[in-house]
Image (tube, rainbow, N blue to C red; front, side):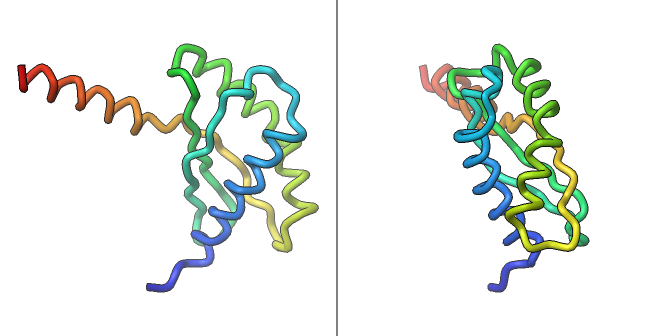
Length: 113
């Protein structure tokens, strides 16, 4: 099966943004962020980057604000590293699939008892 170009660009974006968050971003709000995936539009103009938090979702709003404030810096660094005509606009979205999986696991344990 062949991958779409937008999928390949999305995977590369996740890799580069993770490295930027680890090395260049000093905002303490985004220290416990794990990037889980991406969704890039077919025209490569918009990208949704999905993230999860280590240790739960207690400070999810603070982390979202930190990522939103760092988006311009991240985008400018991506422009220097990527060989694209347009660097996608970045939108960071909390990925709640792990929380949902834990909730389902708890429900299954209750039913089993």
